[in-house]
Image (cartoon, rainbow, N blue to C red; front, side):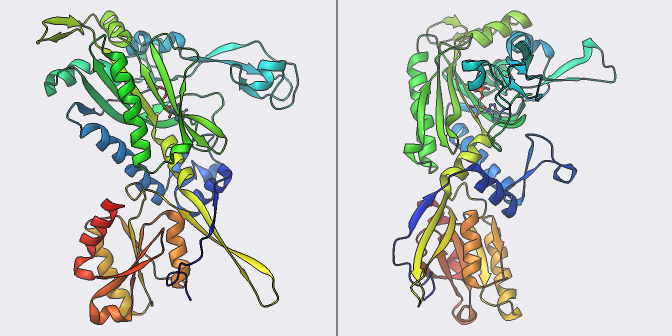
Length: 458
Ligand code: GAP
């Protein structure tokens, strides 16, 4: 009996153990590739492939819709290059740096503030040597020049966070949308940091995308909104399928100069619980600084109370790439079933499944004709086109049907749709569900509505 006809015994489930499993799946199936691979790659830069680019859009859409479909948040798409004074005002020119140490023996360069062997024994993390340089501050911003002259007057920075775009557009957004405080600005965009020790695949890179929201509130109400946003962000992760045991809040021991409170939402990556998102109470620091440096009054006038004040800001900031990785880690599972042959030897069969939430899965359905012959492949392709009007879909006619199901399981496709010889007469197809492996016969004319409903009910 095929697996699709009879999903009887419960398989043993193995979860992801190391990132290498995901790195190789990502390359093999087209999620993520090393940047400039044919030239030997460029450190800590990654390209999102055919499936990865679709999935990344889905991650962004999930975040964007959650934020901007609220009645109190507007969207923004600010430029990466900003006036250089922005970064003076924000504190990044003077303070956005990490302490760096070089090992003079093996040439390893590492961060002094989070390298265990250095903090405890003043030793190099690679060779254990003690022939180390002094600590020196290394600014993480990428510098470049605007225009043809490379002099100090033309220096601009690739933004290290999207947040400053929100602050400098605070009045533009508030006045054009006529929103009253409390209200928020949400944006998704690339940020750049010249990290000393990038690594762990797409977890820490030098070019990455951020999804940040700044919520502007009246001073005195900030603590209440800070708590509300902590809860709202946790709900978001649970809604999109992250298992509750894999996330936790961690309060910062040391607060940044601008912060009144700061929590990380940590995710249990294979290398351990690590920051996924930051939630910060930034007080009125940023708007006050930009008022000072620009000479513009950024006070808000509250018509109801006739008060004027610089709003406080509650910030939620998550890396899109890091969330992509968390979704992959959480979704990955191996379902193992055992069987014995005639000689009594046990063998195992492993079904790799990315159990992604369907909103996040890159492909929603794959059409599989039972045979490659024109009589099935031509109408099956037509069916693919019918579904593509509403969903991201794919088509696969090579290899056995069982193998083709497995290919789709491994990339998280919620539905496989088999067009068989009966389909020609009954104008119906078999829909196979990724997680339960159950099957249903559905009329072709009702298929788009069926898939839409099933995705929503998931
Ligand atoms: N505006 C506040 C801010 O940028 P952050 O904690 O420095 O705060 C927010 O960054 C989020 O951006 C992090 O929680 C992480 O998800 C992501 N992020 C930061 N640096 C990153 C890097 N080098 N590579 C990938 N993601 C990064």
